[in-house]
Image 1: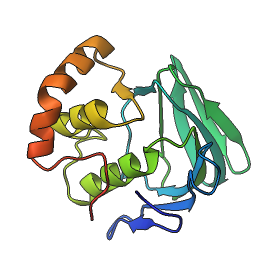
Image 2: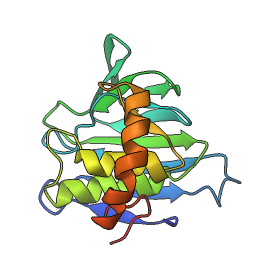
Image 3: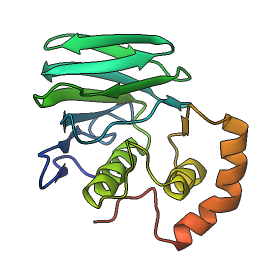
Image 4: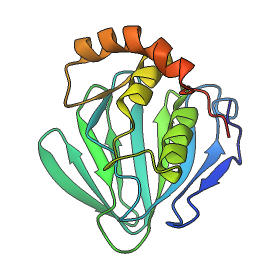
Length: 179
């Protein structure tokens, strides 16, 4: 399990994630991370969290987001909560680094999942913000935080995750972050 102070930095893009407070610090209620996103880096696909809410506070830069079919922007000092079971996406489309504080409630295993996604990006395994399908299905099958791709029916993803998640594990994909 990832601990307070854990930090990953992309060596060329400068993107990073740092865990500021863990579930242990906040009695399981939340996880707080600081994340830096570049225009050319992590670009999450539209997704749905079944079990967690995401709250963003912009520290610098400008965050683009979609919430269902509406597009919006947040700038320094502004906040937004993306509730569970709502289709959304968030990214940086500006040339300056976006720095945000992200709070996940409840904490779940979200820090491990984000760390794995960052590592896949550093390793060149992400395509346009998409993790490899086998990795996504492994996270769905074994993760406590149930996050689904918005473009595929959840039932199909759950069925595929039950079948292919074990294959993903055999190929080295995991919910638990391994450096």
